Image (cartoon, rainbow, N blue to C red; front, top):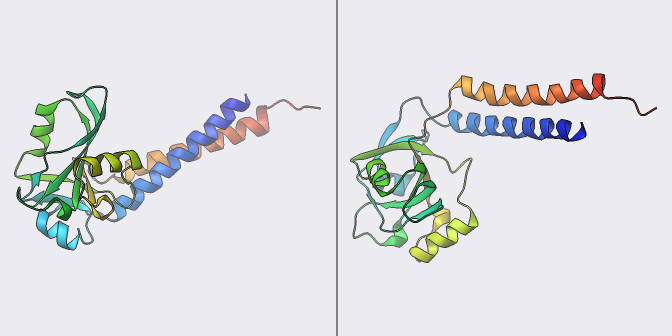
Length: 188
């Protein structure tokens, strides 16, 4: 019974934390994306709207992925983007983050287009140390800490999603409290 209660409390805490992160990100994003060039994003950042449609970019020849094989499917892909093909790699300031990429064709369909829309997620997420090292191995001059992470195809969470996370977390913790106080046997 103790494991169930502990699981409920931990699960509730995780849901509340996820809800907080989504709330924080949504508070920094408008409901409509702003159009911004890769160069403007690189030089000036996204400004007050983290929901962007980035234009005038090219992807680097190197990526880092998480998955079971080189050919996909990949659960996560980090793909640097830059202003122009001849640009010095040390000037890269945007890294595309894509989830659930099926294969090379899917990656190209999602990234090789005139514009790409998503959320700048630096305020709530970062690239793990192992993936940073892999990015630096492939592009030695990249300064990962100075890059904007653009979560491709991600939209700001609506109030309903945020409420589900936070409300679900509160419900789990409250449920654990009810079970503990009213249904746990006394050790007397």
